[in-house]
Image (cartoon, rainbow, N blue to C red):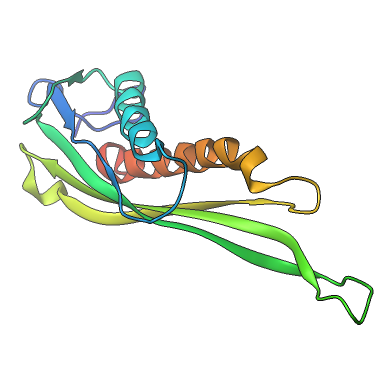
Length: 156
């Protein structure tokens, strides 16, 4: 097994390229361009953290999948203080899940199909989802990308 300072176990003599198919948004929610943002972020992450060359298709490493979860759930209630008014959410949680299929052409044992998810919380009393959605999505994607990278080429 080869190690490098980037923390990958990629054998660059065998594995030279990677390809990313456009991810789809099957979640029914999220910003209009969310799937495009995820696809581009995945490409950029692997370009920045490996020596692999991005190719249009049939890379030595191949990624495909979809955003399959985009949910908003209250995680804590705050009393309205008025018996005539309902309690309301003190914190809201945005959760995004991305199903990834990963194919390693040179080592089929490393192939995987897995859902990666992460969440971020915000306070609906001080801000609206519309105000923080792009920032939350970006933070969630950052964590999901790290998890995908670890599961595919870091093999810790």
